[in-house]
Image 1 (cartoon, rainbow, N blue to C red):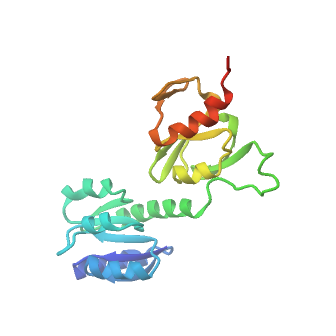
Image 2: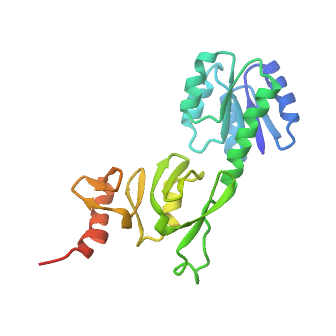
Length: 242
């Protein structure tokens, strides 16, 4: 994993560099004393992980991270524990309090590596074109194993930023992917997106009104953006007429 250190304190950068060298899977590709120089580097180079100090002169680590479109994984470091909440609100992998102990550092980077490795593997298999229509199952990578799921077993899928929760008859699975990615790989005659946060298996829909889709154990809001396409494809085309 390629990583960089962004910290205005030379001694802090030195200590972080020594910790990085202890981890065989980390490759330090840059050290920066402020967000401006680090930003220029990110524009030209691929980075997997960033050790980012929160309190820096000029632009703070938090302010800079908020402005990045596609930031690498981030582990915050700071001498001020009161800033921890801000770090986690920005989906940081972890938060290290200075002075940083090696065992705590190892725990944080191992967590980052686990997330990085999940992102490097395609969670749902993409069958070849000549078999895609006849397959009625897929495989999902979650909890470090591939679980076979038949489409009929999947009831609904809930989006959680970079993760989704698949609710199935086998229980819940939580692969690292977003809702748009998983929707592109599911058969459209079985699954449909009904709002920004949910995909449902139409076979499990019990009733529909103007605002909600009723499943067995929950009501899911029918989003305005998705309502017309859903009603046309799954309701009007399957409606008993007079």
